[in-house]
Length: 368
Image (cartoon, rainbow, N blue to C red):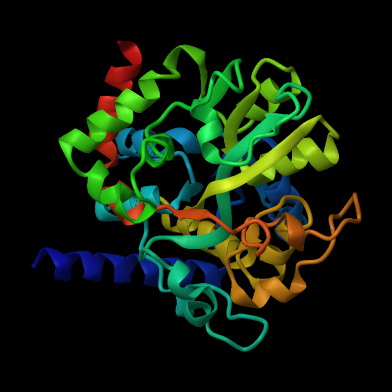
């Protein structure tokens, strides 16, 4: 009964939004939430500015994606949803969808077909991991290090993070359990294929925290994606984790003495959700925006500004050179064969199930 009622409600919302689009009754302002820094800049260039020029709508940028789940829960509870489109990682999209906080999308009806003639569902393929998730990019979380601070032997594997004898100095790691727990187990001898089975147990979690304890006093914890690049640029840390696109910007655009450590890079997906609880006019505008921003050309356009792989298969052949530097972008993508010799596949479904529990344990561990 609940499933039927949810389906009927979703159908009604979709019909209302479609009618609003066809009648031209769409909001003339929208708030889009993302991660800030070089990433938001790439979205501004590839999506926001062209959309504003085409429609006249005013887009307000918000950089609160790291807190998206908590804030959308609070907005929904208060009955006052102020965001229109939100950029989230796949696991957060699954959680928001399961909780009824994100709008379900019919990809083939509401998203643009591929330029190669494919339907949206064919074009995105397995990246459509949730009925509410509109994929945008494939990215990785990896480690950057200062080439002038690591001595004569540059690090070659992820376990350099835990090797404070060979590489003394501060590290920066994200202030959440994701990636840190996996890397800790990998560097404590757990086989890659066994990481999530081990992490599912109390003993495995204790093992990961014990490994992180060995470097806890040498870690600067970050919350915003721009933090590690700034810390590396300022020489305040010797190495640190962040998103590969941020490191590309630091290395290629800013010409900082930094290099990328691709070993055990963690592949993940990022994309859009539309919150539930919007007025029909705002929902129609949000749907119109994501249809535009996730078409074949727009996703390829984003790769001109940041080294993230487009989520559509039809976009891949259109990836070319950097808009300003003129360098080929394909070799800087996390999916390039030379960079993907030892990747770690992030299990977003596992984290959707365990995130709240491990978030609480991780914050408790930090406070000890």
